[in-house]
Image (cartoon, rainbow, N blue to C red; front, side):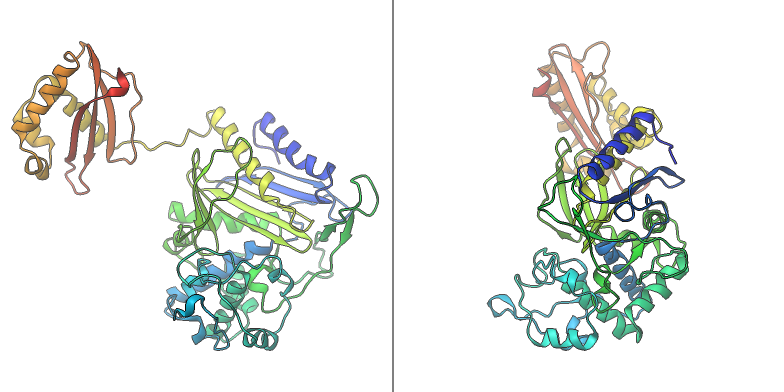
Length: 486
């Protein structure tokens, strides 16, 4: 399906085709979508070496994207009054008694593990090989001892062990298996076709996982070696799901629907927005060449949240597993998203997926279909700015009193404000006949505006911020000579 600009389609196709040609993976699939439709989707290579091309229904391991399902189940239980996120984890899993740095007595809580701040060390790729262990094996593993790298609740550290423990919390609360909880509380109510075991004999096509034999050149036979499938177990809560592009698009759209107030499904929009909030700041990751820097990066509940210099908030999660790489990413401001898969272990499909999303958004903006993201002032804020501009030339206490909230005169009497405004106007040689600014106004929220007024010998910088209560009044009003305008 192709509903993006031809040039954008060509660019996305080239990004993914180059990975197959260069031997990153035997096959891949990518889909770019918005809240209404799939805008671009295409498979590349094969579901196995020399096999058919993956399509929208081909199953891949989504690996750590599964953590968002684990987090959602925990919030469902929390909202039902069955779980306190601030409860210590050892109350559910008594065998968990980690050794803490410097002997500080802290009991890691469910919330700490949810936000990757339980003090446990980063454990890729060890955790990915533990999926199938039993509950008894897990208990014996914990009894051997666990050592924390940081004081729980103080720092980000990506932990698969932490999410395995959360899977056990779910089992203790529900009295059933983790797989049954995810299936009954999420997959079935949402009609999602994700599963925890490779389907057999029902017509479903599952991409075979591979590892790269590094010593082989791209064009030589035997570059890719098939990786055996692992089955469900205690560590399924870290990355055990199989899902297709169609299924993962449905999951992302449901999570993203929280931003439009969609209340369908088993978890409220408020709780889904809670998943997509930055709860624990993480060390910044390198960005792609030419990609604006991330202003902030952190973990929510089962999801990464980042603030991008160009696009604002982005929500995502990657998955790396023996034989597979997966990524899901979306942009709440526009509703655009991407899911992508490759059937080679730790292939980092997040990189081309991020490029694909940026290309799609840029293409939609260039065509005028999607406006540039911008914060726009309320009409009341604009009216207040025009009234305030008028005070520069003709100060009127009655107009000022009707414009300003009560704090303005209390913070600085109106006669002093009038004198300061007169001094600023004099400093720029008086207001130009056309009192307008060449500089672009600045707005950091709808109740705020910074704008510039030209004088004959300089310019003034004006700023207002409105009250949070009705009727809206100006609570902040400043007039200064703008040195940048000289």
